Amino acid sequence: MSVRDTAKKMTKRRLKQYTEGRLGVIIDGTGHNFAKIKSEKKKMEHMGYDCYMVAVNTSLDVAKSRNQTRKRALPEDILEKSWSDVQNNLGKFQSLFRSNFKIIDNSKFLSAKAAQSKFKKIMGDGVDSFVSKPVKNPIGKTWIKNQKKLVKNKKRFS
Image 1: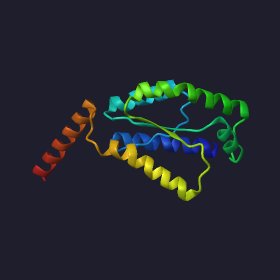
Image 2: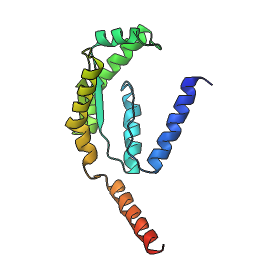
Image 3: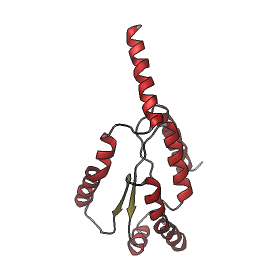
Image 4: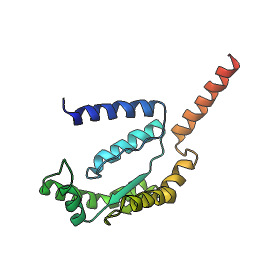
C-alpha cells in the first residue's frame, strides 16, 4: 500500500471519529468535482453540521507555475482541466453555500509571513465569525439538546 493510500485511509478514519463526536472539521479538496462536494455537504448536514466553504482561487498561470515546483506535479492537461472545472463550479458553490461561501484570491506569490497574515485575515473575516455562532441546523440543535440531557442525567446519577 502506498503512503498516499495509507494517509487517505487514516484521514477517512479520523473524519469518522470526529463526526461521530460532532467535532468541527475542515475538509480540504480541489473543488473540481461539484457533485462530490455537494454530496459531502448534504451528508454533513444530515449529521447536524452547519457548513461553510472557502474557495481558494488562483489564475491558471500561477497554478501552472506552482504545479511545477511540487514533488507530485500533475500533467499539464489534467491541471488545466481541473482548474477549468473549479472555475466553472464557483457559481454553483456560491448557490449551494449561499452566505456561507467565500472566495479567496491566492494568485500573488507571498512570503511565508505575508501568507500567514493573509490567512489570519481570512479566518477573522468569515470563518471565525461562522464557527463562533450557535448551530443553526435543526438536527445539530437536537443533538446538542440531547447531549446536554445526557450530561445532566449523568451528573444526577453519579
